[in-house]
Image 1 (cartoon, rainbow, N blue to C red):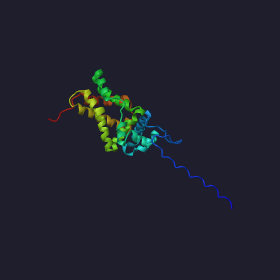
Image 2: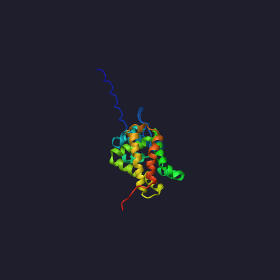
Image 3: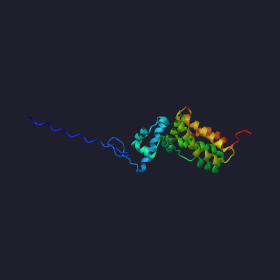
Image 4: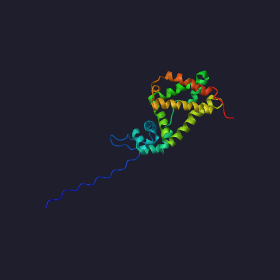
Length: 224
């Protein structure tokens, strides 16, 4: 009787991959938790994902895929999506510094300086993503709205209030904020024409006097 063919040995079980381990070709990059560039890569991916999808639709897995890391690494640096969103909120310039400089140079052009600085922050494509992320996410999610509100309070409204140094400074700062957020919505999110295609100079000339009035002129009667 002929011998039976040898039975092949069973395949060894695959070992589960650890967070940050190098994956097969075509997979993720294999960044490790100690890699100084990993955290910034995750933040950049988060800004792009929040800008494209808003807070509700953006996911940790999607952000990890964009950053070419394992989702566990995202949780390693930022425990929750809320914490990641808060860390990803950035603005290219410090509003307080912009206003303080404008006041020291020419207080009469303060409105034009603020509007021009706002446009300078939004116009470059590379700096627009975190700003779009703020606006789109705040529109669709109450958690994101609270985070954006706190961020604007700390980084925009308080510095403007301190720099202006006039009565009702907080009201003035929030009026300026409402004007600029409306501009961002119409020009960069909804892309309403002809505002979306207007030149920087046109917008500064049109909105500068309004912002100037908010910051330096009498706002009218107040409650007794």
